[in-house]
Amino acid sequence: MADWLPLFHCFKDEQFIIFGGGKVADRKARTLIRFNKKVRIISPDLTPALQELVDSGKVEYLSQPASVDHIVPRALVVAATDHKAVNAEIASWAKAAGCQANITDSPDLSNFIFPAIIDRSPVLVAISSSSTTPALTRYLRNMIDAALPRRLNELTAFIAKLRVDVRQRVADTKQRQSFWRKLMSGPVPDLVLTGKEAEAQLVADKALADNEGKQGQVFLIGAGPGDPELLTLKAVRLIQQADVVLYDRLVSDEIMDFCHPDAERVYVGKARADHAVPQEGINQLLVKYAKQGSTVLRLKGGDPFIFGRGGEELEELAQSGVPFQIVPGITAASGCASYSGIPLTHRDYAQSVRFVTGHVKDGSADLPWNELVHDHQTLVVYMGLSGIASICSGLIDHGMAADTPIALVEKGTLPEQKVHISTLADMPAYVSGNSISAPTLTIVGQVVSLHEKLNWC
Image 1 (tube, helix red, strand yellow):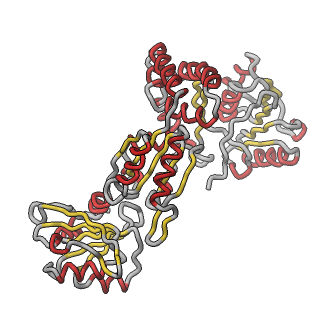
Image 2 (cartoon, one colour):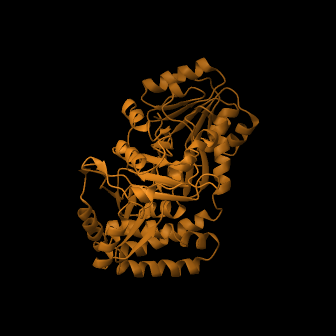
Image 3 (cartoon, helix red, strand yellow):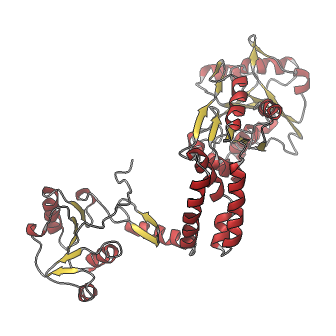
């Protein structure tokens, strides 16, 4: 955990005292005079550059050695002499006087530090490596500076002006927050930044008019198999805009971090024999939040239309007259197979693939066995870990070779991923002798034999 909390503080009335007259003191002084007029330098000698600042009246100057008498109440002290022992002594003076201090090259003695600053007033970006690697800080500053648009101040002015209109026309705080999230992820910023402010104003006016007669809607979004980098760009954008997010247990914390801080998060996860919210309750929640005018996100692991019961939820929305959109996600079969080096189809091994769900009922898996036993086919079983013994025996009993390769992909696409390889005959004993936890995907077929050769994770 970082020790430094980045804050923007108004130093309008505070006195800055810089001890030192060299290059480091010069850098600190030039930063400070951009934000504060009360900067005093104390040093027997000055560099020519610092002398110019003094001669121009931008800083005060006392040509004296550092002394505790120079510390004044509420001052912010910068120790930037060329002597480490002197800097440490200045730190002790500042601490005794209750003053904040920045000690060059000694973050352990400091209680504030100077970030690298990108100034697009009134927008300021501050970057810090907690005083550990100044070269990296400068590198990042240059990268971000190059990426930020030069007309950012014009966008700031446009948004500030629009904000007055929004506050007058949208009384509800949550609706205002929702409006801004959508507006800023739409075309308005780009229009302003390319000099098309009139067009941007037309788009903003229409958005405001639509918002006044706002009806909520639901986005059914596939969150993929776990790795947050497998989210689609559209999914990320909508997650960031949502007012309410209903999510299940397969959606990782890293994915939930994309949510806006003010978004309401509702956990509706399901595990075997443990449903936080029954399916009918989830359906009703989606309708309720949408009817309240919210932008509602139903976030599901994998793809919502592959064993995700997304169709049932949409039927309820359609029946209730709630508008909705669907954003597909990478299903567990594709994600887990790819991250374990097991191609689901391969010209020499399998020309088809079949997905089934392996829920156990009355102690056994209820599957159409005769349809699953085919040469040159890959079988993928979702949620089959608890019934693996029944699945293996069922396939063997209906004609699949006992030595057919089988893989269990545990926590697929995540850093904790493990791939367990065996045969139909031996996998039940393997599972009994090892600790394997959900979520786990089962892949059966000759393509599993390629795992050792193609595994890349």
